[in-house]
Image (cartoon, rainbow, N blue to C red; front, side, top):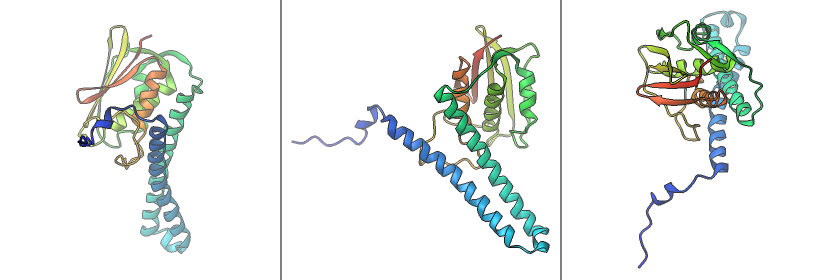
Length: 222
């Protein structure tokens, strides 16, 4: 007698890395294609408008939509390319003491939380041993993701066992793994922010994990 097939049985098998990679790249292509199509469509409509309409309310609405879509594409492309460079070991990092509070001030000046209030509890003496650019990119991505569906974001910095621990809390944490085709879309262009931050943490000799309702970035202290 033939045993019935268990549809859950193959889930314990190791994933095919080629298929995993293909699924991830399919998701990235989909995320980039949608806002790029919107930007091209709105730009084409703008060229068809007369000077009066182009300078009026309709032209302003189309211009805003076009710029928003291009900004989303820029974020996706920058995060994706940084992930690729880190995976390939081709990022020329410069490790040095970095004041975490100072780096965070630079990040918040770019408004990654998009209007969501951000509370900072990081001492001026907290210093990490990191590449400044990479640390700022990771912090920006974490703040942006914590601001998703959040009334407020809080960034806490401390030393734990000789390491710098940066906890970013806000909305419910999203998965840290690389998204694959079929995963929910991220309408702000931050779909690759967590995979990027995870790779940055590893490149700096640390790790990114979920702790409670936040993202915990742990990296070497200076």
